[in-house]
Length: 229
Figure 1 (cartoon, one colour):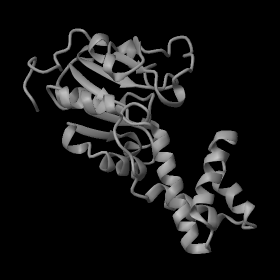
Figure 2: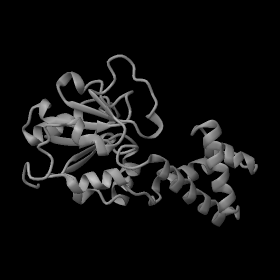
Figure 3: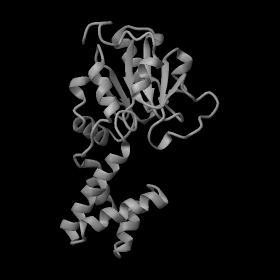
Figure 4: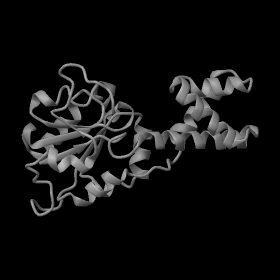
């Protein structure tokens, strides 16, 4: 079976990336304006909890009497281009060590941001290939099956020979399940308690990647069942 993983909140906790980005922005603003980095980081964390991600940097700068799009863009650029301090979730680390063949990755998001995450997690040596959907145009972001079709052609396999493991029932599974892909939702991260709309849920729902062998019982991807790639 060909395993394909999502990235954010599937293989690592996305909140750790956000915290890393906030730290990078706070350090930048301390260097540029003298604002204490610890206070800036704490302010951003509180604002995220209370109001969500929208316009965080706009509100931060406004607190200091700064307006204008240039200053906001500068913060966004620092956030997007910083080298993230993130690590695989323990369950993901353990699972990747167990696989009999290298899996694929299909992830949405800004192509520079996602590539830096893949680098920070040292995933490339452990993957057959990482597909960042935005490299193929926004129209090919999930729920598009474009990148999955590229994998299917590359492997010369049927849809039923593939499994996709993700966390977001709003887009990860809706177009793959009808094709026969073994879709598995991991209840982790911000979507952990989301109730999927009719037709959007994965075939199987698990609480941890540790449960994946039970979710895919006919697992030719486990050790001893096939050769390494």
